[in-house]
Amino acid sequence: ERWRRRLTVNAIGAVVTALVAIDVAIVKAPASLVVLLLIPVLVVDDEKLIRFTLRESLAAEGYVVHEAADVAEAKRAFARQHVDCVILDHKLPDGEGFELLKTFKQEAPDVPVILMTAYANVQKAVEAMRQGAFTYVNKPFDTEEMVLNVRTALETTRLRREVQTLRRMQA
Image 1 (spheres, one colour):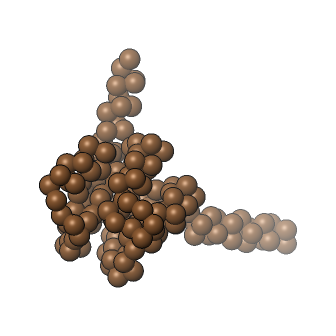
Image 2 (cartoon, one colour):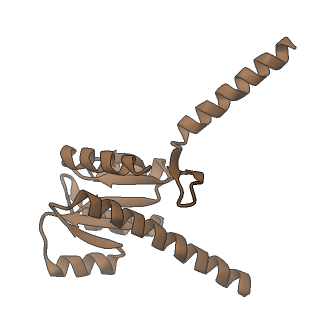
């Protein structure tokens, strides 16, 4: 009896530790179902206020937010963490967001990257889309719009994966 109780307590402790370790977010689904989602988003921007604003807004929607302030930190975070979406600033203290976009797309082509910039320019926007950016957002941006961009990027990626799976099943 005593060893069973100890085993149960240890098992519960291990489950709680695992849930905390993998950053589980609970989100209410449309049909009033509660679903466990692992939706990590990496926010890369050298401006602390922007990272804070995006972290708070995305966390309020049930996303798990990882942050990086420069290219080196972003590369480490991308390699270390599983990420479903990236919000990336165009200009960073130690490099260009475009170069990081290329790196991310080479390592994980299906992870959507939302590129943002304070230096709006049509040519840069076209180039970002050619490089594989999901969308290009000008600063200052509307926080609700950015959350919608993340949601849309994730849904589009999910639908693409579904289509690929269905095509493989038919082949």
